[in-house]
Length: 357
Image (cartoon, rainbow, N blue to C red; front, side, top):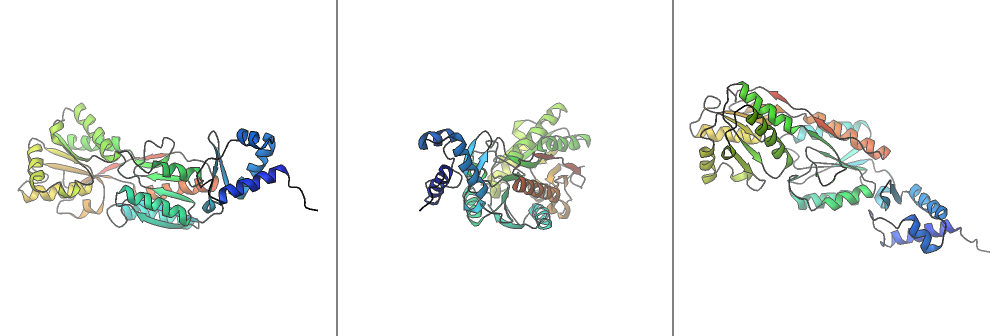
């Protein structure tokens, strides 16, 4: 005689079927205990027992204060893989950041799955979907164009609901109000860069900043406030903004001519990063301007460009490898415990070069 299944096992079988048939997909929120109890005429205790069984199997994930979500097949067992998504891989400060991440992951027995967005939202979407499908225990992501609305925010929300935690580095999305990140203190660094120039006699400060990421806005904010407080603000016309799409044309043709005009009354320029500082110095030198005698220039990030150009760039030091280590430690703790880590803001210190008089 066939055994009659207990009520909670019937509910387990029903939810199994709903998930396997794709009616509930990874990241979807299932009905509340109360609604399930009403629908099947079960007690809340029976429903709770069924949900606990599915949670133990790895099929469901409970979020306190939010509800119960489908975790998906990839989250049923540990993969020992961490996805890492950066804007670039082999350029600028990214090799050092990736090195810090990889070292920490390897020490704890994890492998790294690496991808680059090239600062494009469609690449970010493709990588997020691909890494989830292949199976990762967590993601370390550099936010792209973080000063702009991002169309991939719901993907991040679904990842976390399905039990895949995310740690952002360098930049994050403010719309994800409870996200975990490790970033530099860019407002303070912008103020310190302006202060460095003012202490060395600069009295009219301008700048070049990136408009579509939060670092550009925050470095500008710090520089502007410090320059105003120190009486060294050259005014709005002495600030040049550029986007990712504008970057290749910043110093070309009419743009270069206008840039020279806008900086004509300045004696110090704060640049968004070392790449812009390097290109500005080459641009000025090609037009007979001496750095630092005619114009002092300061950058950010202490990259290889700061050390090996014709003029060694004074810059703000980015904690590259240590940022990678900290991001890896955060994601491992979140993946292994399910407990969200506190975000970390790291300080940047000036590194003296020859580009400031």
